[in-house]
Structures are given as structure tokens and as C-alpha cells.
Image (cartoon, rainbow, N blue to C red; front, side, top):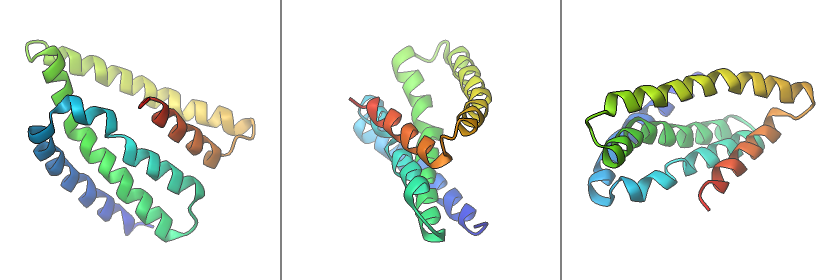
Length: 134
């Protein structure tokens, strides 16, 4: 399993560069709605996949989303809110992400206590992410 992490990192770094190129070509407004689609695939693979190969492919898709996340939101904030208050906007976004990072494990543990397996939670997360597209 440990050998998968460098592959994840390479995918994330490659996607950062690719996302930068795609931003120049297609603009933020056209890319931002779709950058979490690989995350949907990753969660579904983690939920239904069995074995190391499924984990590898899941981490590849997770790396695609991570790399895009390193680039797209920053371009989004600058494009839609300007650069004058970019630092304050990014700080507010980070505060929300930190709260989500605190709530997520507690919510997952709570749901596990009520016998909602992690695999089922992954399916629900995928459904939530897909619902945001439509």
C-alpha cells in the first residue's frame, strides 16, 4: 500500500501543471464545476473495489482532484472576486475547510456508531458531489 503514495503524488503534481494549461485555454468558469469528478470515481473505487489494484486506481483519481484543487480554487477566487482582497477571501475559505476537517471525522465516527459502513458513506459522498453538478 505504501508504494501507492508516490504514484498519488506524481498524479497530483502532474495535474497541477495540466490544470494551469487548461485554465489558460478554457477559463475557470468552465472547469470549476467538474474538477471534483475524479473524486467521485475515487470514492466509488474505495467503496466497491477490492484489492490493491482498486486502491491504486482510486489514488490516481484522488491525485487528479488534489492537483486540480491546488490550482483551480485560487484562480476562481481571483477571477470572480478580483485580487485586491484575495488574501482575505482565501483565509476565509481555509477557515471553512478547517471546520470541515474537524466536523468530518466526528460525523464519520457518529455514522459508524449507527452501523453506516465507511463504504456506504463513500457512496453517499459520491452522490453528494454528483448532485452539485446538476
